[in-house]
Image (cartoon, rainbow, N blue to C red):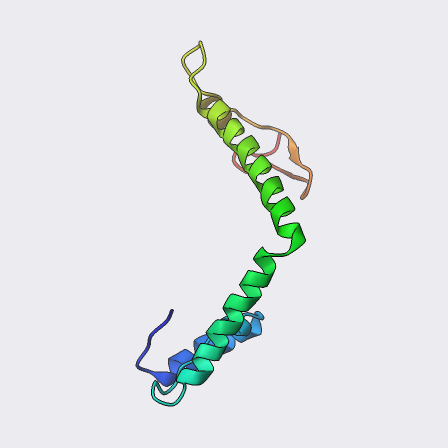
Length: 116
């Protein structure tokens, strides 16, 4: 929700949201006494769209896949921050490591350490 006393500012925000295809998720209220029905219709449409997405057959499958991935990420995070027998975490070791290899996506050397 965005509230503003300057209608031009609201128009700018609305137009920017429209430019990235988010206007269907926005209800622009210019006059509270005249625009209520339009705003309620827009909000209702937004909720109906979301409800349809939640009730789609793929929603449950995607939700389960996301949960599996989240669990794996949690395991990695726990492992990275677990203090090892030598008194350090893997995160601490990785942070201090000097990585002198080429970055495949750009073919650049790590700028922190310069050229090898």
